Image (cartoon, rainbow, N blue to C red):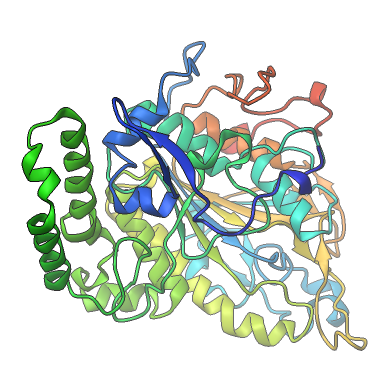
Length: 461
């Protein structure tokens, strides 16, 4: 089966048949599962025992991951691997890298706040896979697997949801895998694990006055009106009154209670940024990216295992430098504040932050028409950033050559980075993954699977 054959449609409302104990089968979508509270207690019925942990997992230093995904692929030369000596054809107008608070490390000039947090994160300047297509590169970076194999593999968030979600004792009403705010959409994130491990994409915009989270916050409907609807529903529920105490209806009542706790109770308030001080919201930046970083911190405080911030707009074939002057300051403020805020709250040591995209962008600027100053896709070498959860700060792993065109030292392949994150989370990288064909599939691939690897990031773990 090719990867494209395994892709699912973008719709998040594809029905699944859910069978609750002692009840009839119910066609239900993921969104409806959130609305009805089935992600928690009833979700445990769905999970079942799978015998996933065949041996003792490594000791965990991290509890959660925040993946900051630069959808489209950010330029490595303009961010964390500047090359001022390469000249104007490579640097364009961004040719003045700035020092950081770690001696010997410089980063792009549009990242002054992140420069003051460099002691808390490490830069990988030698990420590589050689793929220049969005779909296949995204798949490779987020699964560690080659595209076009027999099965579509799950991404990191789905695997973490499997090992750290409801199967592993997570009991929160907030789903264990959240995407802020739009699905990444390049491939089916759940892969062969199935839709139970698909992320819950919030929709909405946290920078708006009211963050309208899909299935949790209804636009234009106040909490009071929602409560009134619930009371009216109970008044009309004659079957519930006649069969009060029946075991099957009791299960639905519990699910309803959980759903309304998510919508009207304390659980759903995690998305209510009006609870934050205005100064804190300003500190993160009053834009979608900055406020998404703030929501991510609040989700970490609630113990959510995996959060992806999907930042779009990095596929800069045209007007690249104009886009960088607009977008990089937002990333600089939001990400730097997130790192510092987690550190100040004592949460950075237990939270992995992973920044990057599916590839970098062409080191040489495409000045010619029709690009007129754009950068294309570039998979031979690119950058990533990791912080927290057991990753050391103030380090640089690997290097690209003088023009940022090839790996010069210590290549890092996607499976190397992914495996390192799993280890910090205490996930056994050799554990078996359940799959519909009953194959012997491990959490991370090895060289025997035909995957290039250069080893875990032990230098910074």
